[in-house]
Amino acid sequence: MTNAPTPPQKNGTSITVSRGFATWLDAQKVSLAFTSYQTGQLFLVGLLPNGTVSFNQQNFVRAMGVCRDGDRLWVGSLFQLWRLENMLRPGENANGSFDAVLVPREGRTTGDIDIHEIGILADGQPIFVNTKHSCLATLDPVHSFRPYWRPPFISKLAAEDRCHLNGLAMVDGKPAYVTAVSQTDVLSGWRARREAGGVIIEVETGRIVTDQLSMPHSPRVANGKLYALDSGRGQLISVDPETGAKEDIAFCPGFLRGLAIHNGFAIVTASKPRDGSFKELELQREITRRDGEPWCGVFVIDLRTGDIVDWIRLDGEIAELFDVAVLPGRRCPMSLGVDTVEVRNTITIG
Image (cartoon, rainbow, N blue to C red; front, side, top):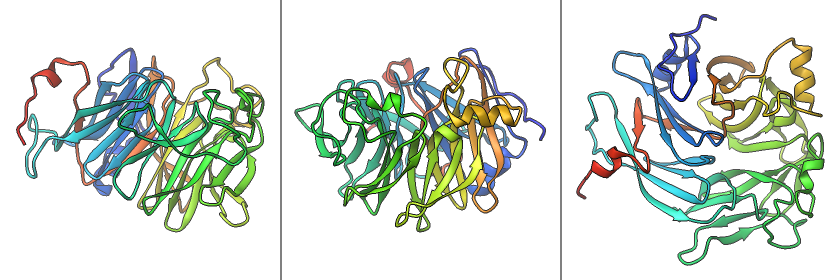
C-alpha cells in the first residue's frame, strides 16, 4: 500500500498514514484521540477542509487513559485526571478548520497512582483503573481516590502494583470486565508472569473469565461480543464470556495497548519494545517468524475479515502509545495544552 504524504515532523517523530486512511475517516465520519505516555502527549487526528489528515498534539505528562464522554474527553496523566471540554457552540469552528476545541477545564489531583483506562459511570462520574493499588477507583473531593472494587485475589489496597490491573470494559454505565497480567498478590508479582496467566475478570461476580492470556489489555464489549488484546502474543481476540474460549482475530506487529470498536472496525494502538526485544513473549517469536519489525502506530482492523485496512505509523522519538478513543461526528478536533500561551489567552463566557 502506498503511504500518504508525511505530515510535519514534531518532536523528532515522522508520522505517515496509509493511502486510504483519510477516506476511512471521511466515510466513518469520525476522528481519533490517542495518547503516548512515553512522551506525554495527546494526539487528536482528523481531516482538514482540504481533505488532508490533521495531527494536533498537546502535552499531558505521562498521558495514558483517554475516554470520550459525549463532547467531553477525560485524560489520565502522571498525577492528575483531566477533564477537557469542547468550548465551541454548535456550528462554530476555530481557525476555519477545527469543529471542536477541547480545553482542559479541570485537573483532579490523584497523586501518582498509575491511572490506566477510564470509563464513565451511569451518574456521569469517571471511574478508572488504579494500577498502583490494584483496584478500580473513582474521584473523591478530599482524598486522592475512592476505592470502588478490587479483584478477589488482592488482599489489601497497597501501592505495590501486585497484578498489573490495567484494562476496563464498561456496559450500560457499569464496569463489566477488567484485565490483569496475573493473579499475584505480592509486590510487582506480575513481572514474573508476563508470558502466561493473564486474566479477564467479570467485575460483578469476581469470576475469572479466562486465565489463558499473555499480558492482556483493553477489554471491550461491542455488539454483544467481548474483545480484548492478548498483548504478549500481538493478537486482537474475541472471548466467550461464559466459557473463556478465545479466538484470534488479527495479529499486529507491536505491543498492543488501547482498543476502540466502531462500526465493525477495531482501532488498536501498538508500541515498539523499550529494549529492542519483547523478551520471553510469543510476540517476539511471531514477529521474527514473519520476518517483520515492530511498529509504533495505530491499526484499523476490519472485524469481519481480521485484515488491517488502514494505519498510522510513528517513527522517531515516539515509540510507545497507550490508549485510543473514537470521536463520532467530529471531523477535525484540536485541544489546548495545560501550560500554553493559547490556554492562558483563550477566554469563553458561559
